[in-house]
Picture 1: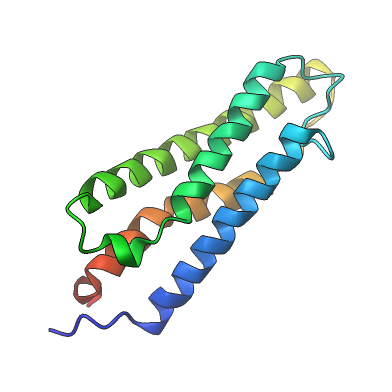
Picture 2 (picture 1 turned 30 degrees about the vertical axis):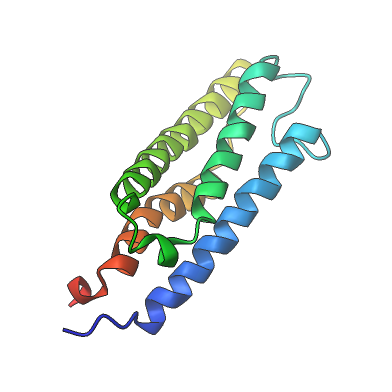
Length: 142
């Protein structure tokens, strides 16, 4: 069996790194208040917004881990399990964000925008665990 990593999987890993950088930069933007995703006059839970920013940084940093170097480590299974748990929690965070935006819009008598951005982030996050897994076991792709 060949353990050479296919080109598509290498490209997926590059996109994972870019996704991790995007999450970190997006969180830093929210934490610094430069261009927040939430209107500060409407959302009055700054501690929750800060926690979500730190969580995005944690997810992004986990995506930036050198998964190719971790493949031979006995800690790989723990790191992969942690990544999988973070990705599932991130998906729940995106669903919660959509629900919160709907409640806020409903309270203001408005209709919420379609959650396209959150849906893209949700599915991109859920793809990270299989990417890390198949980097270690590319022969299982067939």
